[in-house]
Each structure stands twice: as C-alpha cells, then as structure tokens.
Length: 364
Image 1 (cartoon, helix red, strand yellow):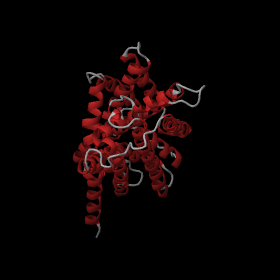
Image 2: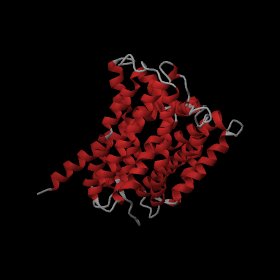
Image 3: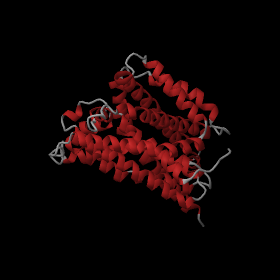
Image 4: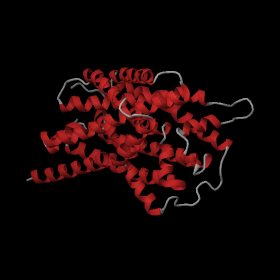
C-alpha cells in the first residue's frame, strides 16, 4: 500500500474538525437534558477522560510493526479472527457516525433553512460532495482541514461572543450539580464517547514522518476540541438558561439567529451557514474515508478509493432508516453516545494490554 506523509498541523486539524462538528447538532440540548445546569460538568469530565482513547491507540500502534495503523496493529496483536472482530467494531463506529451525522445535518437544512427542498436531495448533495473529498485521499483532506480550521474556529468564537453580548443570564449555572451529583458524574463518564472520533488518530499518526511528533498532534487535537465543546456548552447555558435550553433543536444555529451586533448588523446566521456546511462535509468525508480504509485493510486491498462509492450508497440507505429527525437524534444519543466509549476506550486499552503481555512473553 502506498503511503504519503502528513504533518502535525494536518493531523491535528483533521482530528479537531472530526470531533467539534457535533456542536452544530443538538449536542448542547442533549447535555442539558442529562445534566441540567451542570451540563458543562459532563463535558468537562468527558474532556478529562479523552486522553484514555489516545493512550490506548498509541499503545496499540507501538505494539505493532513499524508503519502499522490501528487496524493492522490490532490484527497483529489479536490474530486474524479475533482481530477482525475488533476491527469490525471500529468500522461499525465510524459507519454509525457517518450516516447519523448525514441524516441530522440534512434534517437541519430541511427544517430550518431549505424548507421546500426534499430530504433525499439534501442527503445526496452532502453525501456526493463528501465522497468526492474522501476520494481525493487523506493528504488532500489534511490540507483542506488546515486551510479551513481557522475559519471554523473563528465563526464559533464570533457566535459565542455575539450570543453573550446579546443576552446572558447571571445565575445560569445554579444549582451547581444540576440534576444531581451522582447522575452528572455518571453521565460525564458515559459521555466520554463524545470524543470517540479520536480513533481517527490511529489512521493518521502512522503517516507522520517522525514518531516523536505523534503526541504533539494528539494533544493539540484534544486540547482545542475540549475547549470548543466546553465553551459552546457553558455559553449556551448562559444565553439560553435551563429549562428553556432543553427545548431548542439546534442550539448553535438558534444562538446565531439572536445575535445583534448593533443596529445595522443583525441576522448573521447566513454568514456562518457556509462555514458550518463546509465543516459537515469535511466530517462526513473523514468518516467515509475511515470506513473505507478500515475495510480495505481488513480485506488487504492495495487501495482505499474503490470502496468509497459502494460504501456511500450503503450509507445513504442507512441514513433513510430513522423515521424522523428525532429518531435520528435518539440513535445518536442512545446508541452512539452511550455505548461508543466501549469501542473507542475499552477496545484500544484491551488491545494495548494484550500486546504488552504478548511482547513480554516473547522476550527471552
């Protein structure tokens, strides 16, 4: 398999966009449903636990042969049969991320922006664009992410500042523990799956020229992603206090709609819409690439691109399965963001432990 090199900036940018795109979906509302005024504590705990994913991925890669990815190293450690089952779990995670994000973003456009456009047209438009980007390869996606990451972060920052300037509730975080300390702490551990997309580092860091730069890219990715998710959640509570915060469908979009920068600058959501769509397409392209790359490595195919088109057709079919927008959100909330940490945290950690034990047994 031909491989090319990417740098720290590209790896970190891909990881950041892959993780933070969920802020444009009902993330903040779902966290508020779970934690009430303590929703920010849930995301804080999840952010503190996200290094576990990276440590597990790094341990797996170090126990594999030089140049191995997360998929090939997992098969080397567990063997062809058990390793294929673990890799199939990774594929399932990326696949669920892909079709749920596709459906949720399409529903957002249909219900709030393009009211007369059929859902299937929006699904196909997003999916075809994402598939084309994914077909260009990980190097092209890395450069695209590096070029757009500044614009995306800036749009989020302007939205948050504008929302606070327009309206802010001083006592928004009271009571401190929201729905209860035990419940909030439990949800913080469960919602560590909000960072499940960090598994993408298992595909990216082996392509870097220097192994000593792995940690630099990973920590930049985790730090910026955690800050963005935390800041959007806590600002949302200040701008839209609880319990009203549990009733808005797409929090970030609603915040952008109420922003008023003086008398002549109002209704700025149209300025950020293109940026958010770009972010959605990039996330979908990364997810499609990870699905195709996982399958190609499991099947030992020399190239990833031939799998992108058939996978896109299957993704489109699965995106139509949820009966409604709320059903799609429920799939994300009850399946992906509840049990995702079992795949993103437990499996890499178990594989790392198995690889360490195997290596010690083989030493004379």
